[in-house]
Amino acid sequence: MIKRMDIKEFREKGYLQEVNRRFFHPLGLALEVEIKEDGTEKLGGIWDYREDPEGIFYGKDIISNPAFKEKAKYIEEQLNKKKISRLERLGFFIQPAGIEK
Image (cartoon, rainbow, N blue to C red; front, side, top):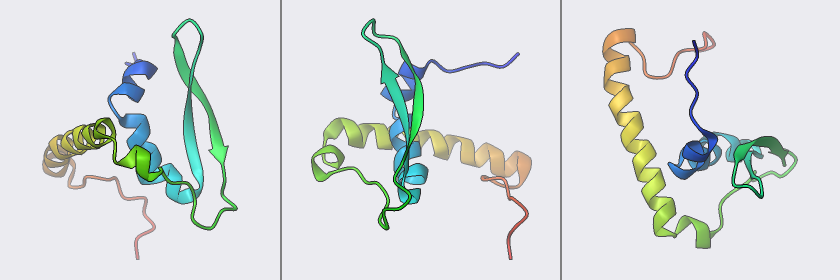
């Protein structure tokens, strides 16, 4: 059985922010979460600004927000926790794709 994280938790804990900042934004993409009028949340679409040379980025007002920084710190801590056990058990942190030179 597959366990699933609630989308609201995904957004509130900073996973959405960081997957966008670290992966999607440099490519000119953004993963979207839709918040319905009744408060339910679901994954929306993928914003596509690949034609923009600089991609997408958060504005200074967002990036300087203490809540933004706390979310980034939380995700960094989660990554560091996983890094040790993945290196020990698997020999890698990020799984190689087999395209390394």
